[in-house]
Figure 1 (cartoon, rainbow, N blue to C red):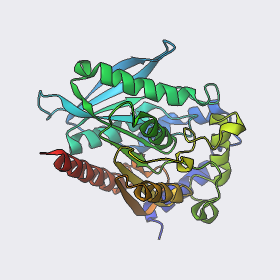
Figure 2 (cartoon, one colour):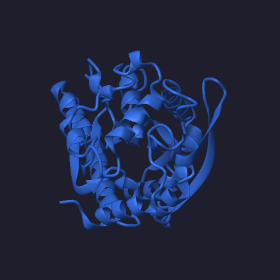
Figure 3 (cartoon, rainbow, N blue to C red):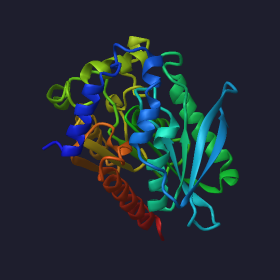
Length: 313
């Protein structure tokens, strides 16, 4: 059953009559950011947030937030490198500060949240290259971040989950990753799964909206099923970093998460899957209306604790 708080949220969105994805311009969608920041709730005490700039291969500087738990020791910590959602088109790292601050507190890890460039102005592969360049920069400048270069986890939600999965696939033979966290990731542009059919409209992220997002990001249709675009279509996932994959029950992308988990397990990759009952797409940043984001964060923290135990001699 859809949780009451998410049902109310969907009703409020419908009554607000906001510009909808597929009909609105990217600028109109980006103008809705302040409301999303409020929905995420206040930034909790117990963290510091530093503003950073990350250079890319073409000398563009990306805005980033480095979030640290104040309780952490002076020793170098592990790092979660986070890529935010928003269909590769909109949303900002400000929306994620509150949720990622909770993640930092719960895990004791530093979190670097990066604002990659957005489609349609910057289509594939530019956002993916921005994320790869940020990972490489973090490795090379770990001392500046006071983190361990060999203890980096890539993470993201929705389109950011797509980018994190693609980065993990591309990095497996080049950059050792501690893990990957994929929160309701979009991994299959064919949009033919059972969950797409079941929740095609009325649950926040509609099929038509997701189709529009894919078209903004991948403007050459011949690349649509490339593994760097659609990790679910990768022919080889062997050796990829351990994965924590989260899905929302009432989400068209639910099966993307589950099928990717199955794909990783089929090649003996380490993967953990959770589907959160009663939730909708985007719930990770809905802390002002639900306790479910905290449940997800605690599950991630438990998974990281298990990873750390496995790495101990």
